[in-house]
Length: 240
Image (cartoon, rainbow, N blue to C red; front, side):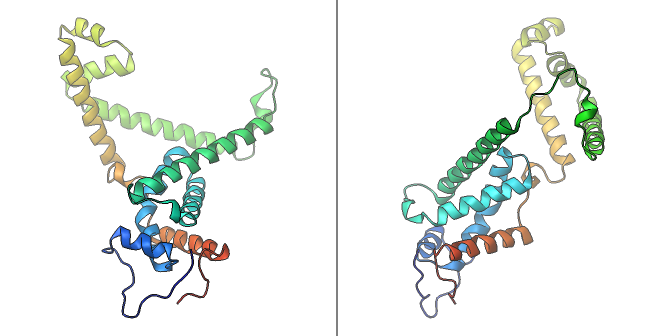
């Protein structure tokens, strides 16, 4: 991208600026357009990355790398596809590559231990507390699930427990409850839908509230990406 001056009287890109306008400006090295595209894409890309990698830090690394790849290769983007689709694919591929690198590193570092050896030999100072927190978390989740299942109407609760807790087949449940298999499937669907609603309420705001990426974190991502683009010569560091 080679920078070019913004025409006099033109406004900075904002929430209402069409995406195609932002992309054209970003191709010309417009920093404000790059920042606006980052602001718009941050929530989606972070959640996509977080759905593949195991922690927030790795997800942020994936998102940053995705932007650097995308904004240094904008000339390869074709308007036939949506920009969000194009950059999402880059994020997925970037996350998968990061996972593969991590797996290779783990395989390289793996040491075969004697299976009869005591686990205590391998415990790090903070591992005990981490295990306690994990155990507590599982217990709390189990209690929540038990309450949620208990709150189901009886005609939904029993087929659900038979299927999910006892791993019984649809046919076996239908036979034992003297129901049509279609009725069993319908009740299981309704039970799962109710449990999903309960889970969404439990996480305060529903599934659209998980893995948020906004505010200061969003602005910081834009700052880091723009700085890296400037260092790479993608556009001038002295733009006004």
